[in-house]
Amino acid sequence: MSDEGEGLIFDKRRLETLTDGVFAVIMTILVFNVSVPQLILYAEGELTSAELTSERLLDRLSELWPDIRAYVVSFVTLSVYWLAHHRIFRWIVDLDRPFIWINFSFLMTIGLIPFSTGLLAQYRDQQISALIYSFNSILAGAILFFLYYYTKGHLELVDKTVNAVIRSRSGRRVLITILTYSVAILTSFTNLSVTLFLFLLVLIPEFIPDRYFGRVKQYQSDG
Image 1 (tube, rainbow, N blue to C red):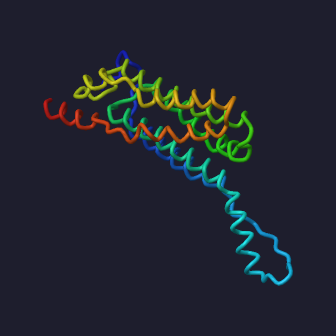
Image 2 (tube, helix red, strand yellow):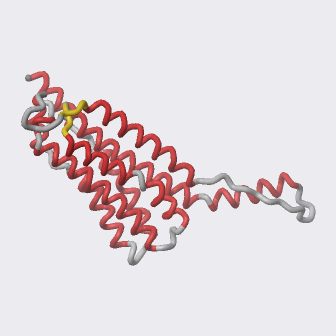
Image 3 (cartoon, rainbow, N blue to C red):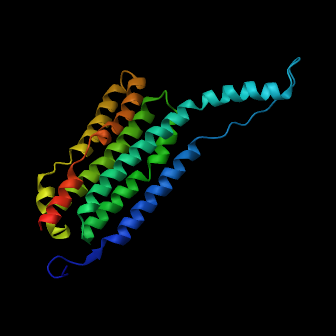
């Protein structure tokens, strides 16, 4: 693609590689919020050290459930956003500077997910932790949605064989995710358990078949 009139044009491969690397690091860091239990054992009556270890370890592992739940929710959330980002990049041929900076903003926002996850796990009975986690996820979704609409408005960056497909798509999957977190904010004022359950619902849209890829092949073969 020519540089003239549109500013400097960049190859998408480096940004795609950077984005995948950031996602990989963030998804790995999430597990650091789940700590291996440390036990301090003392002799108690007739119980042996092994019996004490087994009993107390089970108790401590059960206490880790909120941390594990927060890890699963955040991992699923990041997976949903990675899939949505991947769908956008399937269209892209070249990048311009605004697209790159929108993408950087998206990466900066999801980079806060491990922090908001740790806050949610440690202070699960506090509304402020649920609010921060929800706002973090909504902001990431909103920036991704903006990236999607920037792409729709700059079709010179897109593979011309799929222009018609892009124009017809609404980005409803990302909107459903944003809506779910918005509802979670509202429920946090009355029931935090319902809020935590809603965090899991972001996975549901990903079970809905996406006919986009088949349509892309059809358009490319017709071209």
